[in-house]
Amino acid sequence: MLRLRALCFGLFIVFLVVAVSSVSAGERFTDNGDGTVTDHQLGVMWAKDDNQGDIDWRDAEKYCKWTFPYLIPARYDNWRMPTIEELQTLFVRNKDYQGYETDCGQTVKIVPEIRLSCGWVWASEPMTIDYKLKDRQIKVRTISSKLFNFHRGYAYTDLMRHYKAYRALPVRDLQEGK
Image (cartoon, rainbow, N blue to C red; front, side, top):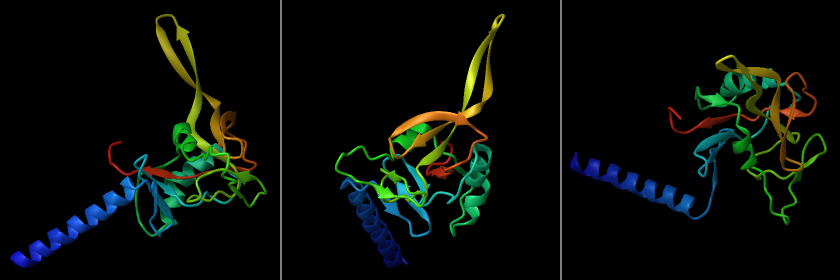
């Protein structure tokens, strides 16, 4: 019994050393082989591919939370839409990186571990307007939200009901409660 414990502990240590050395060696992404990619820099897991078709913001939210989790073998229940800041970290600003051409014919400069079918991805943050009524500050959600353009590398805002060439890219936090 003691040998079995020692063997298990030894295997755990080897696994831990390999995992830490690959991350410390500068490898930001790990392909999990199940349609997902782990991003060690952000501590999140990305879908390897977007939703593969035009989608508005509300349907993108539903796709990330409800549809995508059933398309992959591993079952996680905390998939969501990414923030603009998270999407910006995927854009490759290196002038030497040519990117790749998407299905819609647009060239994108996103990390090669993630494949987009078109270059505009919805972010989770709907636009809000702050109103001051007497002594109260009120936030009102508008009908617009942010997107990130992986062709040019900038964020912008559009109406949530628009869907032409817009995509959903699910992400989930690796740590619960985050």
